Length: 276
DNA sequence: TTTGGTGT
Image 1: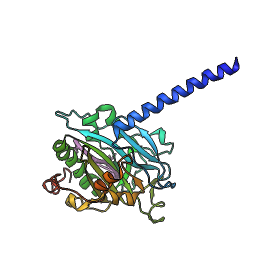
Image 2: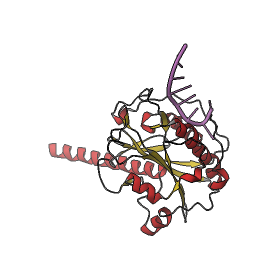
Image 3: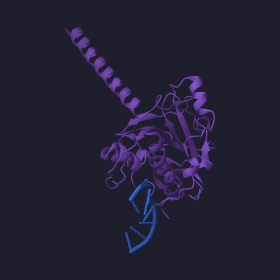
Image 4: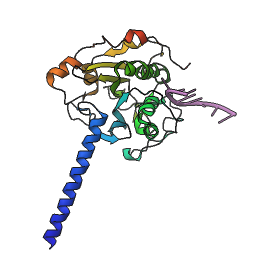
């Protein structure tokens, strides 16, 4: 009798775990392309766990006390209706006490990784709410956050997405490898990145990709194409492996070089920002 | 405000 009860319990647990796993895979496939980023070599600095949000995924590091990447899809929206900006909020899933006032008087902005406007336009109000979780923030210098990065976000949604119809985006931090410049440089508990990357992919038979790395110290008026890099370069600086399900030849074709032809970058590289 | 913080 007890054995039978045990076997029935085991059956339920197995089926439940299987259903959870299948659903998790389905969500991850929908919010990423060719697999979520993973680590090239497993070290404490590259280890992360995946937080599921409405409209985007976050690769959360308990060592950096911040996200290592976010992944989301964008598509053309004819008449986006954007609700007002909700307030910043802590995320209990991170366990770390990072709250809305954690960056207070630090000189750093709470910089969105998954952006408010684009996520709200494409994925709706609940998703917009999730972009204001502190697990989606990193300390960003105002000149970068409000100016150069804002210009890049605007160009993605207003130029690249209409040009190609849809786009997969991965964005995140680059940390300084030097211990005192990196691991010890924190706002509260959160490690301050030295730069940020953004990878844009147009899926298809011959996928196209564009990658940028932008440092903290910018004026904000720089042309965007000054910051173009290869995906291999981003992988070397972050220790992450992007698009792990891509075959070796396809990865080589997509990641080894800067291939900006067809994107029309020069048309938008000097487009001015909205602020200041 | 398609980004934000500071000081009142």
